[in-house]
Length: 213
Image (cartoon, rainbow, N blue to C red; front, side, top):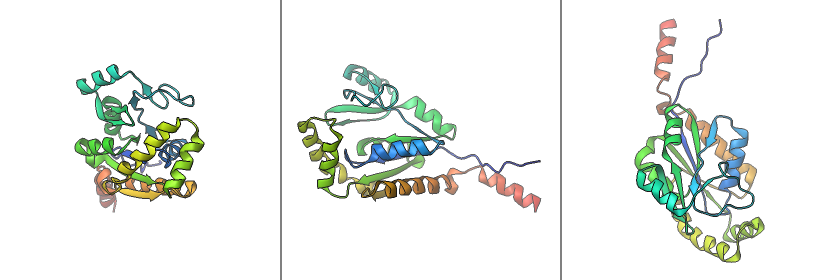
């Protein structure tokens, strides 16, 4: 009879952060496409929906009044104001996933990450993605062609503040080659899934081995 060697573990809150245009959204998409064991935490936002975005897939788009009501009820695990818009993580879906041992991907900024640390630090694994240069960051934002010039200028200005928080993250990588950066992200996630403290049930498995011996 075959014996399962799968050992239950705690879920991971896997955070990817970067300045706009540095690659976190692309890396997030690649991770979701290639790893069945992680799901995206769908944030709520007051930002207008881009043409390429779908409601309930990329974000839940809400009014500022709706967002404030959610925040005041305690429905958000974290929230932040970024580029003049509000973003936040619904609490209940994230909590349920972690308790069930499922990994959740967070595409959030440094403000949200620090809030996750406050309540869920042992469950959080954070990665900050840097651009290879400011010139390349500007080029990527312009090639994306989804924002007006004034919005691009604001994002570039805000990137200075965002990048100053790199040392508050568990891991930092430079996205000068997308495939190489993606391989690093996958490696980080694999290592973190194997950490002893996330696999409380491993002690029972070891006890079984010792008895068998």
